[in-house]
Amino acid sequence: MEKIKNFIGGKFLTPISKKYLENYDPAKGEIYSLVPDSDSRDIKTAVDMSSSVFPFWSNLPLKDRSNYLMKIAHEIEKNLEMLAIAESKDNGKPLWLCKSVDIPRAASNFKFFASCITQFSSKFYHTSSNVYNYVLKQPIGIAGCISPWNLPLYLLTWKIAPALAAGNCVIAKPSELTPMTAHLLAKICKKIELPDGVLNIIHGRGENVGEEIVQNKNIPVISFTGGTKTGKKIAVNCATRMKKFSLELGGKNPNIIFSDCNFDLALKTTIKSSFSNQGQICLCGSRIFIQKKNLQKICQRIR
Image (cartoon, rainbow, N blue to C red):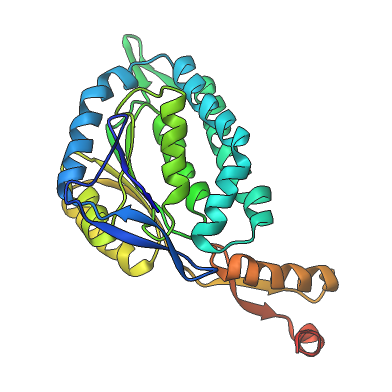
């Protein structure tokens, strides 16, 4: 049985607590790996490593940062089968879906931001005869990235890639329910020789690792995708510490079907939006608004 390790400062380390969580294959109900049950000490180690490498990474030419991200993208594509199998085993998702959507999109995230940073523009204002104002885009420092289980690699890379592209270092916490693709991403970063400490991946529970990332004074920006209850708590913690934060939480997304719609297509799309990925997507259609003219027709079709 594999014991997953934290990825800190370019090294694979056991949790300081020496404690592990059991990772289940939901399709079989069997334990197939052990996940670090990390705590604040592991976060401190990662913060120290990121802080030391941040001056180098933030001042690296954009083209060089872009090249690192593009290398990661290419390695994800090369290892698509392995990553898809790992994700399918982690959360029980069909292998074909992992291979056709989740893993390719993770690679696309890195490609997009690798290209994006080479096209950065700034603004310049001539406010008077001898006064000029510039808008400068500068990295903040260490970004804390906390992602959920439903799209484990895709959503994690959607946070990591732009943070790294902008010159920030990252301390990432994947869901303890779906840790394997993040572990494999760490191996990819090691393979392409991403500078040590630029990306750290720490596994563990939200109340230990996640909360410590949010509260740590040396992590000035937080990106979180997950439940609304947890998001509210993060918002309070960040506000009292004057941290920047981004929250993607649960919602009540309506599908609206008008009387002049392409009926068959509208119905097909509504069902797909409501039940794709077992409904575990941020933009899941959780309610339907229908013009009265189509109400009976739709009700008959969906019974």
